[in-house]
Amino acid sequence: MNQTISGLESLVKPFRFATSPHEYKVTSLRECPTPEALQLCETPDKAADYWKLHITSHPHFNPDCECLAVLLLNTRRKVKGHQLVSIGTMDTILVHPREVFRLAIVTAASAVIVMHNHPSGESTPSEADIKVTRDLIRAGQLLKMELLDHVIIGNGNFLSLRALGYFYS
Image (cartoon, rainbow, N blue to C red; front, side, top):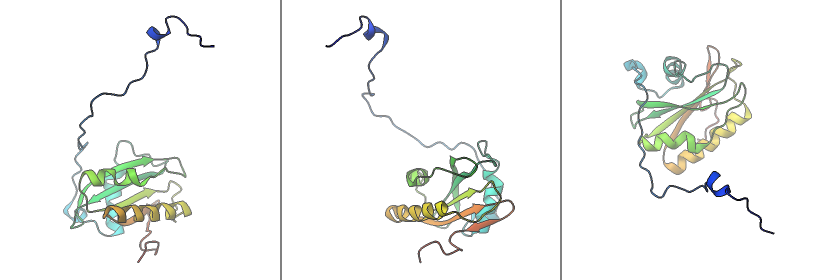
């Protein structure tokens, strides 16, 4: 029994994919003047200082939610840029290696530092933080792009997962 409603085709058009591919480009959104002392970013304290200077002033940053940012570094460990990758809830954030490394690949970054905040103020890593870090390490190894650190920002404090020994030696 195949019934059709007359005139339905004129009301609802079938979905069609575009026939031609699209060209994409990366456009920087805002310039972030950075003091010379913070341009070289190879330690957790410099990453935390960079967070305070640039990420907290990002228009979409919400201190009441977990926010994950990625620092993009060149071969000399100087900051090329950063991206606010994901904004979660007050105790959870969705992170996928594809999103973390996407802009790093496009901008030809040599290494990345991942940072996120804990709105509770406690910077101790959760089991999920440790698991995500290990997943990102493996993804970076496949891409030949080093994950230098994962820094968790609390209220006035921070912890480095590398310094805590969660990175492979």
